[in-house]
Length: 69
Image (cartoon, rainbow, N blue to C red; front, side, top):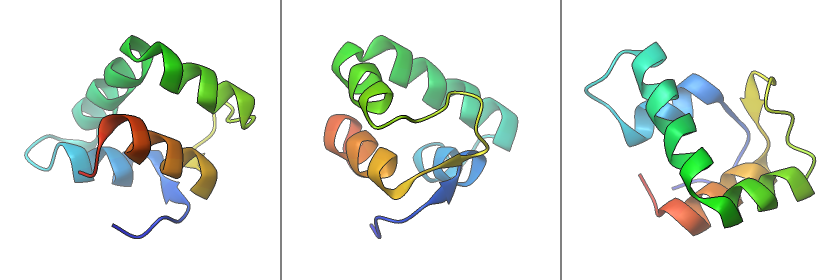
């Protein structure tokens, strides 16, 4: 997987390819909320929860904690 900035829905679809963008994003957000260390890491890298994109640093943390899609 290439670590780069991704639109949230695009990254979510990588994890949940058989879902609609909306459902995939809801599922990814649910996984992120349940992983307390990941939530803390995203907060530490100043990832705004309302942003439309995940920064490359945020993607790196997501892949580190959730694994590659």
